[in-house]
Amino acid sequence: MTDSDKRPDQPKDPRDSYHSGGFPEQVQEQPGLTAPMEPKPDHGEESYEGSNALAGKAALITGGDSGIGKAVAIAFAREGADVAISYLPEEEADAQDTAAWVRKTGQRVLLLPGDGRSEEFSTSIVNDALAEFGRLDVVVLNAAYQKNRDSFETLSTGEFDRVFKTNLYSLLWTARAAVPHLKAGASIITTASIQAFNPSPGLIDYAMTKGAQVAFTKALAQELGPRGIRVNAVAPGPIWTPLIPATEWPEKLPKFGQDTPLGRAGQPAELAAAYVLLASDHGSYISGAVLPVTGGKGL
Image (cartoon, rainbow, N blue to C red):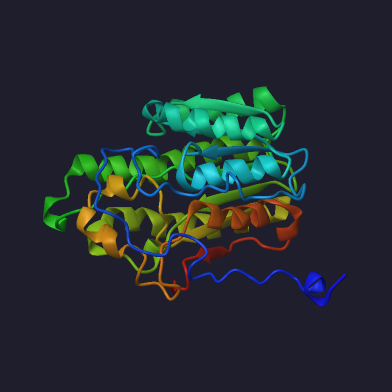
């Protein structure tokens, strides 16, 4: 064996380990799909390697069809968990692709199409996951909606209602249905945002919901801690998901993520390890935390 054989691989430079430039202008209608995106986001399909950190567990991921939710579903499955994902019916193609990646690991997957703005649906997905898997150990409250606002004055009540119903009401309904079934060692993870701390005026309603999610996370962690249930949040920065071209700000895409200290936007795959940490026993003393994955942008 030569000296070079003994040397570990050089670490990846985080500045250019993924797509490091801007993005071409593109617009999608909500909710946004993966197929039309250019370039395609990386969900860890070919790169994420599990270590059995979630063996035997069952997880429910809202908004698990694409973007961050898809990356989390793939990672959880490769860590040994069965996965249920909820998504809008319009996102069926993305959901089926995610399900295929989960099945390749040998884990079970449950697809739950519907609209989280319905209390009945947001509650029923918990019961469906329990019926399928016989247990529920991890709940990832990830579903979200955002849209660029030209000005506060033009923000309609209908749009405001859509953002709050998707980002907050559905989160509360699903969590409230799940908590009675969670045992000590279970974990609830919300997908907050850097917008909760550094809000953009064009995303004022979205940022409001993300600030509320942080408060929800911290308060619920205090309530459930004595029962051995941990509650945490991940706060992504600029991440290349279908939500971005569907936000309707094409002129911003050539510079999207370029203002981070690492100089680029993140990929969904780069968030997966954060969720695995918070869902697994590796994070057994982490509760009430907000874990930033922002490319160095401060909260």
